Image (cartoon, rainbow, N blue to C red; front, side):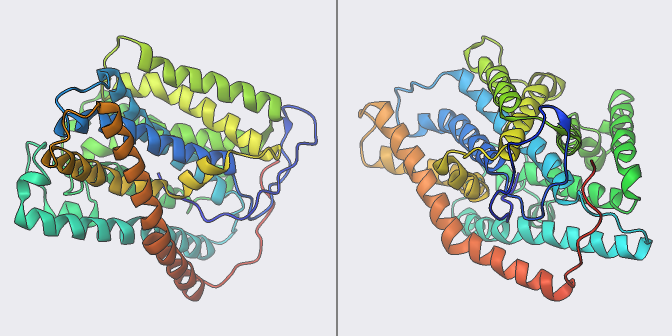
Length: 385
């Protein structure tokens, strides 16, 4: 669910459709995939706008079907699995101590990507919580746990910043994927398959109820990350052209957005995973093939993808603040569409400023620190053909 630091796209549209893929250059930027991050963040924003709208007006207009906007989280998880395979595609060290160094670098990059901005937003929220706890954590039946909030470890309660529950899964994905990187490269696809088998066995055997760690480890949502990783392996192996990419993208988007127009209520667990995983993978693979073909992605959506992590962390706070100020100013009789536009624009502007003023400098600092701690390595073996 995070923004990559990739360079300009160097993909080519040449070659036989659906042929075996050629190696992908280091620094390839997947702009269409980055745009999907922006779409995922927008979907979550819409879902929460539907929930927060009532705080600013008594005449709500967004339907309950907008709860399906939470599919943005599922899209984030699928993208995460894909990106983990993509960024480690050339990691083929023969010696265990070299792989250990790589894993250390991998986890350092993930930790410095997730925690700093999360901690800053959480600290701001914590100061509000100390003064007005009813304004921050009123929708959850359980009090937040400080240890879980700070370190994003599994717990039955949400972190203080409620959207942080997804980051608990993300950190678990990264840790287990890092362990998988200790195996030789040719074993990793089998490791992903074994991971899926263990998760399914644990879920069907009821192990998920044993503890908070087990609840997360054997949750059906894990399959979204693994499906994204499998999509990454397909992308590295098969070179689809722009036509196949566009078709898959269209089919996947139709498969996702049809739920907004259905009478089926949004449900967690297996129903969510079964409904959303395959369309998300189709959208993702289609977007990645379009990037390989060198097609240009919508610039605003790419920027929104850059801002997506900041938007994800800050949007709910912005929405609640705008809605409360709206009602306090006596504007509840103003048409709801005006409130929704103001909330949406405010959330995106706050995210853009947060990215530019806080997140991007943090990313630059983290990258410099990683270069000092982990020496630059020569290019490993080419990506799988």
